[in-house]
Every structure is written in C-alpha cells, then in structure tokens.
Image (cartoon, each protein chain N blue to C red):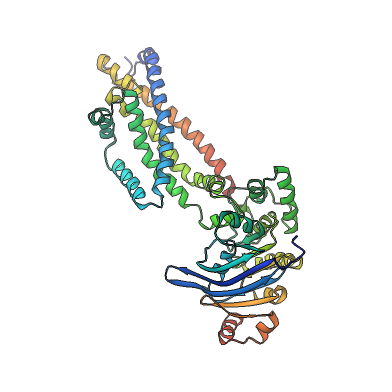
Length: 222
Length: 250
C-alpha cells in the first residue's frame, strides 16, 4: 500500500471543483467589497471631522483586535438577534469583507502618506482641480506604495475564506472536511486542498508582482 | 499679450497681512511689481518671502489687505483664483515633478485637463518648451532618471506650457548641487530677457545683480528695503540689510 491514495483524490476532483467554485466566488466578492470599503474607510479616516476619523480608527482597532473566526460567528449567529439575518453565503462575504477592509484602510493610508504634500501646490498652481489632482496625481502615486501590502491582504482574503466552512458554507475546505467525516482520508483531502489554495495564491501574487513592476518602472532611476 | 505691459499688468500688494495662528508672517505689505519687471526677494529664513509669493496665486490665503494680479483681485472666489492661476506660473524648491509620469506627460497633464488641449497640441507645445529649456532627448524618461538641474528645467517648461505672463520662483536652486545651479539660473535669465514678469525668491546674488530690476529684502514679515541691484548691493540703506548681506556674501 502506498502512503497516498492518488485514485481517491482523482475521484474527489468533481466535488473539490464544486467547492473551488464557491471559494473563488466568495473570495472575489469579498476582495472587491473590501477594497471599496477600504477606499471609503480611508477617506473617512482622513476626514477633517475628527470624530469621523476616530470612529474609523475604532472600527479598525476592533476588527484587528478580535479573532476573525469570532467575527464570522458574530455575523452569522449574532446579527439575526439584532435584526439582520443574512444567508450563509452573504454572511461569509460580509464577514470576510469586514475583516479585510481594515487592512486595506491602513495600507491606503500609508500609501497616501507617501505623496508629498508640496505636490498639491504644484497641481493647484497649474490650475488642476482638487478632484483632478486626487485622481491623476495622488491615486497613482499612492497606489504604488500601497500595492505590496494590499496584495498581501488580497491573498489572505482568499485563504481566510476557508474559515467560512465553520458556518456551513460549502466551499473548498468544507468539501474536504465533509468527505473526511465519512471516509477518513484526511491526508489526501487536506493535501489536495492545500495544493489548490497554493495554486490560486501563486497565480494572484504573480499577477500582483507584474503590476508592481509596472508601477515601479518610473522610480527605477538611471 | 505677454509682451505688451499695460497699467493693469503686474502685481499689487496693498496692506497685506497674514497670520499663522498667532504668528504674524506678513505685516502690512505694500508692494508693486510692474508688468515685465523682474524682482528678486531675499531675506533670512522665516522672513515671509515664500509666503509672500504663495499669496499671489492663493496657495496661501492672506487675511487682510488686497492683492491684485493683472487687474484681478485675489479674493478667494473660485473664479478669480482660476483666472489668476491661468496667468501665474510657479516653480518650487523641490521641483515637484509628477514622479509617475514621463517628462512629456508632466508637461501635458495640465494642458489637457485644464486648458482642454488635444494630446497632439499639448505634446507639440510641451516639446517646444522642453527644447527651450534644453531637455531635448529625455522626454520619455521619468523624473527619477534626471539630475536635479534637469528636473528643475522641466518644471520651468511645464509651467511655461500654460502660457503664464508672470512666473514665481520659490528658491528654485536651493535644493540643487552647486554644479547644477548655473543651468537653472541661465534658463531663468533667458526667460527674463524675453519680457516675462518674474518674482524670484533666491539667495543667488549673482543672479540678482545680472537679472533683477529690483531687489527686495524682507525680515520678520515686512519689506525692509527695496532698491535697484546696484544700490542694494553697493549702498544698502538699512542696517538689517547690511548685516544680512555681510552674512551671505562672506
């Protein structure tokens, strides 16, 4: 007998692909939503209204300071009592987005601080409007410095979708755990999904690094 | 337009005051710069000279008095700010080129978004001015690939693309290595010889002697002395001016 039963893995592929589809769907939605929340949160964080900024800072500290699994449970089991009942799927998307958004807020803030303040005077002296300066100057400069940490969060978002099996979302990890409960092939199943996660993560970070190189081109010096 | 000074042209400060909180940085400034005139402003750091020129295009707000630029009052209304900024170009100590854009794109961005020129028009114009400041073959490079002197000349070209009648220079050579100062000053002198109205905050006294119609000395938010370069350097009237000159001329 070999240690790993490759035939068993082969038979599990259709089930795993089903799970993979859900993992990708939830991850893509959460990545998009969290990036949007990150942008809005970052803008609010830097609001001239101090109280708004503090509220966002408190949100960031709260999410960073509590276990992610507890947040997932809270959204699914806790929110209904407060009058908000979400399906398993949307609970998953929301919990994952909330978790990722606070890291995006911080990365974007760091990115913005890399834009020299004096360059705003240049744009003003050339007659550019505030929004033109924000869009054409600040955004591209900030994006470049925020990219590495943003990419990190994006990758973690995909990996952290695995926790959503705990509320019964039938994604990749759920499929594996479910089969193990009946057929006890833990080694085969966990190894398989590890490889699948790894492939997705490598693909995403590969794309990200290409983007990074592109954005870094202007700064490479002579 | 730029070459025919009228009464309207130029900059007039009347009783201008500005505070940063409790700090009184401009005190009752009365100053007239005629169309086509070249004025060099010098003075110790913190004397208010940068603030003075930043009030001209409303990068800084003055709290009392009036500033009139080419007949337009800098009164804080959006419309007048836009009108004034269209006429006034500015060059900064730290060049402030857009680091993510090529030299050419640095010069076309505002042309396209503010003046509404087509890409082709904007690029032709940019190339014209880049040639004038002698950055001929580097238009597709990025700022980080240029020396400080080259970057500052690009910044000058970028301003000129907007066709200003007035140019403000805020210590344009202070951040440059000594060997790169000359090329920037030469570009500015050339501009001066073509009739541009200029206010230049600088400590380059050679430049002041060569180019300025008038040299102004500021200290603690007031204009202490205003005279022709000959008078200013050879026969300064005020004690504070003399002390300052002895410090910077060694």
